[in-house]
Length: 94
Image 1 (spheres, helix red, strand yellow):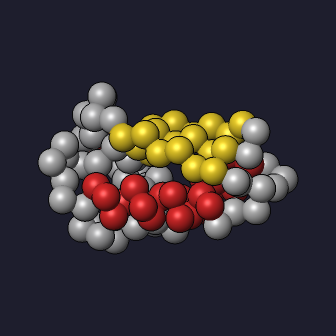
Image 2 (cartoon, one colour):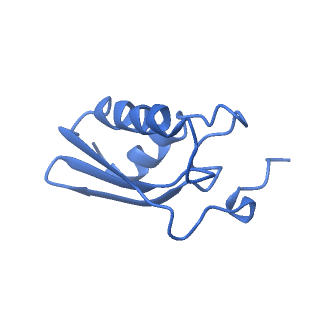
Image 3 (tube, one colour):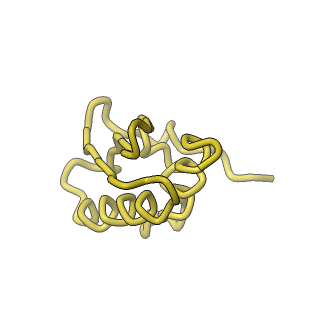
């Protein structure tokens, strides 16, 4: 892994929000990314606290992280503080 945080960020772009078809980075649902001692730590949210897709999104993030070389473990923390809002969505590319 040359740039762990950049590689992790790129891998998370492959995890899509099924409601919008946009990746979790573009949706603003990834709040924090850290890497230490072979473990990737991601703090994320969902669009609503009771989102029925929370488990699927978390599993998708874990799978994307563990598929990267050099990552031996993945820790995904869910938070709703601050709450997600549409203002966090990246603009669509022109």
